[in-house]
Image (cartoon, rainbow over all chains, first blue to last red; front, side):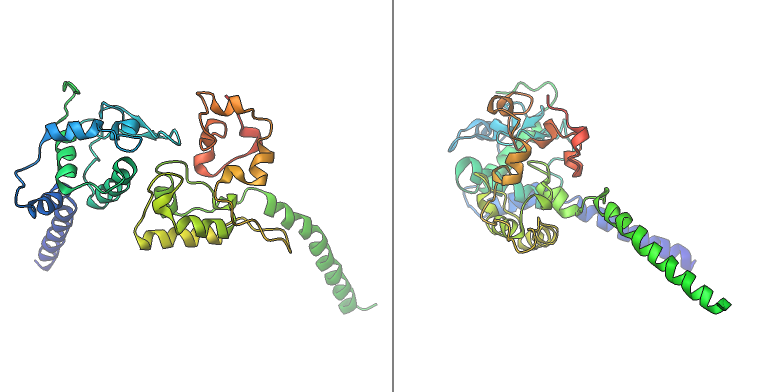
Length: 137
Length: 161
């Protein structure tokens, strides 16, 4: 009986841990975006437009290619970058710390500033909407 | 000569043998393949945009300067949270290139490709070769050193494409 209770507790703890891990990084971005009273949701269309927008020298697509289902290539070092669209690479946008780290770095690289919560949410929404048959603008 | 003296002499001779034979052995073991120092945080973070360049490629002073300015890392932003950066810096500094006795390595160089040893090791590679599509950039160690991402740059493994 005691053992059953122990197993139950363990199972609950494991479930809680896996739920905590599964928290969607987009949720925190949405919470941040809502602090702007004019926020009316994320848009895949705006995300797609931002993907190709050139900043200082680069756009997102410079390294990640126009089609986020494809392998990218770091424009300076030549290193291969795994695809950004979850349809090709399910690990994308599952780790909030990673999402924060890369948006911060890459938005500064491309636009010389950090991206807004609206922009980050738009891009994630677009990348998540891409399917094998999507036509990339 | 009694038995005890015999034993004493023998021990002394044996000890001398060990010292003499042992010295070159130890020296050889030192040159032989010790596993390259590694650290999972360094591997993960430094290895995401390029291979994780081995700490022995630059002196400690260079690594310290580099880790202090990750937000301006050769034209890109490679910033990290303070804890991760500190972990990596400790690993790099501990395993950094050491100068010859009495000689301090030049800590002002941040680009590995600008160090004297890199240039002399690669002096047979022409400018055109560096720019060829198969290599593209001197940052792309793996183009010629197949074990580069695992810290191995053995002469006999080199294949220039």
